[in-house]
Length: 438
Ligand code: ATP
Image 1 (tube, rainbow, N blue to C red):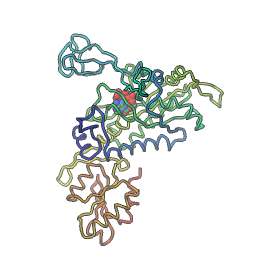
Image 2 (cartoon, rainbow, N blue to C red; image 1 turned 60 degrees about the horizontal axis):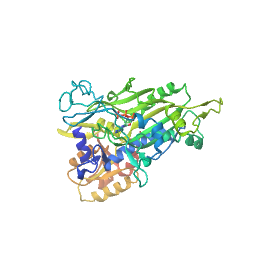
Image 3 (spheres, rainbow, N blue to C red; image 1 turned 180 degrees about the vertical axis):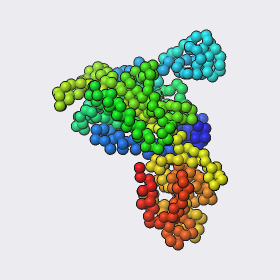
């Protein structure tokens, strides 16, 4: 992980938030390449979940919501992790932290950091929602929360979307947006942060059909993840045991990836039953049931949710792409990103800064950048320039050499095979379009 974090900073993928002030705990900023990578992942998700499907609509709900939403959703009461403190070293852990030996609160329990026994407090509840105040008066009446999940914005809008889009059940609503959790044990770079982005889709179905839809969505989501180019042996399913299920879920499967720090979830598929809609109906006092036009039946739909973290998925993609190799007797670090996900699609290099090469290279660069995100680099030896783009995950390196100014052809180097093709400059757009498809 250290190597990846350092590459991420060096190449402009991810920086620590407010770094010049010493950083802010578990908050990260995306640099020029990181923002492109994450955007490519989110756009891919949106395309497959919204544009390619007739039965899913998009939504962008506000982060701030009526405080009663979080009472109805169970987050005010239940969105807590019992915590224990070590009175000796002052560290704080989740009570279910596997590293704690013994029962917290008992004299035999051992602190996983300082190793002292009998210094762990009994578990206490802690609310993970960020609180803020609406309006200028900081009184209890004005307390609102930063949403800890995007899903609730979908539930409270489900009838608006249904009626305005003229969808019928079964149908879904998809949303990409920020969520905030005051995590107790954040860490591992962008794996668990306090501010993050979710890509969530809630699929509303007739009660009794949720198990079938749950199965379909599990298949669909695993297919999507594999199409990101992740090595299949690094992916597996994990079904939640009874003690792991969230307060709203009847069944849940996580897609896990084998990170450098072990197997961990980055997407969950949940059967949320009618938990959320029923609770909103009760708390808001508004009817949220659905009238089935075919049978005239009224029911509260069941919900199958697919919930992925955009940042965590970005971390999966980065971890999976990171390789250290030896090429031509030299070590190299390369991000073998799927070309469609790569932040930069190609880099343009004049071999030397004379003999008409920079002029031709600039013309090619100007032409390509109307279609693709490309980079121009004339600094240092050509080998050094290739290495920098390998680290950035740029799939193609276009070199303009002595021959180019004679016959208007260039070499295109493939990041992974290192093979060089000689391509007519006029054919480059077509060549890259073909290679980047998929
Ligand atoms: P965890 O137990 O790992 O914190 P969770 O089970 O609480 O996650 P969900 O509530 O199911 O997570 O959220 C769905 C997805 O949102 C997760 O799979 C993850 O990708 C992302 N996510 C949740 N919490 C965070 C966080 N603190 N930082 C980054 N991504 C997160």
